[in-house]
Length: 182
Image (cartoon, rainbow, N blue to C red; front, side):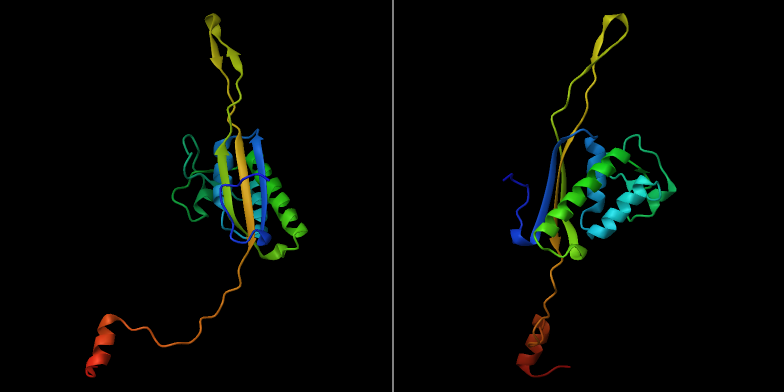
């Protein structure tokens, strides 16, 4: 069993999926996975399919050098309007999300109630190639692959608080002790 970067309290109520050395830009995968973290799985899958059809855009918040500004960038609640439609990265994340969802189904979890609690992207070792330039020079021609891991859990049912004595501030407790005051 591989080690994930985050431990889940109850492993029976969590579904995981991971991919290593994915031939897709690390920075794009990071922005896509960061956008959908905390979302409900159905909503995240619909968002990713909309990105593939250029209906919605992925906001770029960290690696945004050279990323253009578009009106769709203002639709999500993130600062700025820099966004893009990274096709390959979106397909990879969508496939990984589908894989995690099917893993949850095998465990007998309710797939309609799944949330993305953890989506992490790491840099993978660069793959080296060369490009041959004028005057006999040679330059590196590298790719920046990524590792991706996704963890899904069911949303816990909220437990109602038992009715008890009302909480008092220090000032209110002092007034009660003294026996006076309004």
